[in-house]
Length: 146
Image (cartoon, one colour):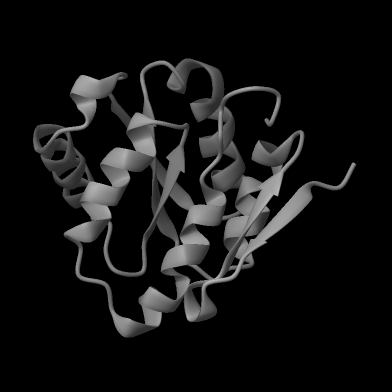
């Protein structure tokens, strides 16, 4: 079954949202077609990680990427600069750089923390074109979407 695709028209920042079953199995393929860097991070929370992180990491590895898993606490208290600083430290330890990308796996805390993180990252003009597209790899780990 083909996913339902919603187009979000924002000019040069336009992107699509895919809704459907088994989307996680296409993660590596979707990232590959965006011509992103080889290194990446999968950021998720402690509630989502046990259910979906292994599949996400393995799928990215199978597509030729070098993913690293970063797990943050679940809940509202994780929406803090302390959590963002921890993410920065782990990204630096894994030597992620401008060409690297981040997969925000889950809802709520993960995208909110990543927004704080990405606001502080200096993005080159070439990467900026792909900034909105990166969000297409964000997966909602709730309901039956995966």
